[in-house]
Length: 131
Image (cartoon, rainbow, N blue to C red; front, side):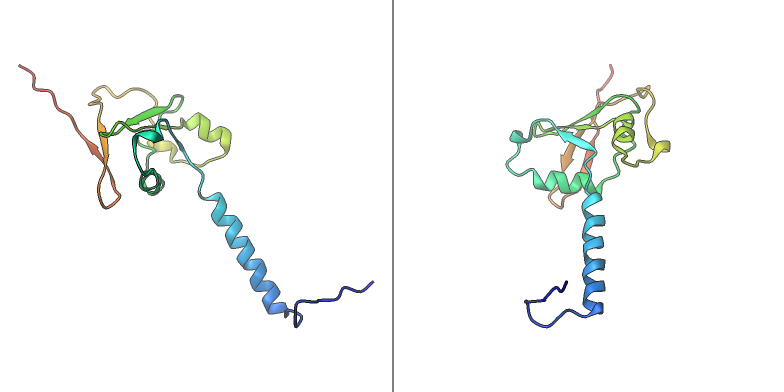
């Protein structure tokens, strides 16, 4: 049996190897975009893309709990839930286990988050004056 190449000159071995490397690189890149959060109410913002980009660049494990989801409340009303460490384990997603919260912090300020114009997530601390 004979296979005839009809798309011009037959590709060289180097081109075949380059194509293989390119396909492997694309496959590896596609697996790195796994989300570790859920956007609860995306309709509260006009463009969700900057938030998704900032979340993907941020290390969120210090806010993540072992067995429950953590909700990030933003000033504009957007709410984002961080998946628990147990959920990440079930999906085979890696995380920094030594950063995970195992219990509620003794002093939790219930922070509100903001996305800066340059695309950085910041935690806004709220303080209550005690008389």
